[in-house]
Length: 289
Ligand code: C5P
Image (cartoon, rainbow, N blue to C red; front, side, top):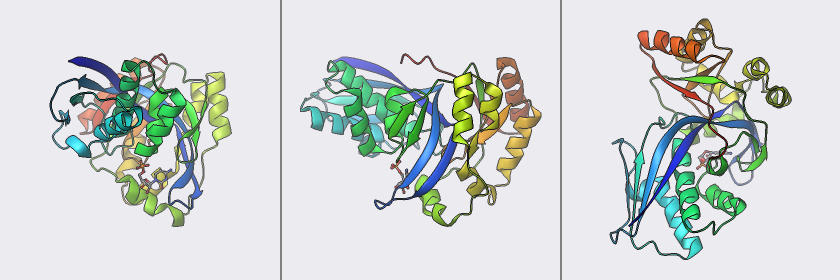
């Protein structure tokens, strides 16, 4: 039996703008996406001689065929024509689901990446990203885990200078968000403002965390604020604890604050936990993943 291990990193949307509905029903977006150190661990065993199995250590995460990691493996073996002679994928979850952190997408991309490495890079990165898009809009980003400006459905990516040293405090509100349900309401929503992608990219180029933090904007947050005033409370709490900027990631509901010091982020985490919030800390990842 052969074992392949891959880390599946979470992402943050430093900016997220919806540009309009497309003919295929999806939306064109524009988003600066950044990978962070919070990760799931994906273990792939080949040659088990048994029917395919996909399991995760969190009960509510779909197992078997319903898990996106299963679909990723199926797609890889269909396209490659290889036969693993039985497969078992085991996912150790740490990335909260339905949170906007791209956890399921990261797991699927880790499967594609791990299998491709095992089969001597049978597919190019571009081919892997194309396969990834068949699995979901966020999956192509998770193939390379670099800071990008993503357009189209999220698959048209331009590499950006990565974040300077930063610490992220993620705060989980006590509700989850269904991405398709939120997208279904997006077309009629009057957004009060949009992210300034130029300023965000300038901040990254200059390695200026102040400019970056001040320009974090996610239009989905406007949509959720009306029904979930708790989000504003979390932002205020993060501000009061010294966050340089705050925003929501993806279609939510996780909020995050950016700090330039680990200690400040850790102190903020303790303050927020004391008043009942669930928090997670993360930093940047090594780009060589
Ligand atoms: O691609 P994915 O399966 O992650 O998308 C989930 C849902 O989110 C889609 O069915 C679609 O309704 C919506 N979506 C969209 N435009 C995007 C990405 C997702 O409308 N760029």
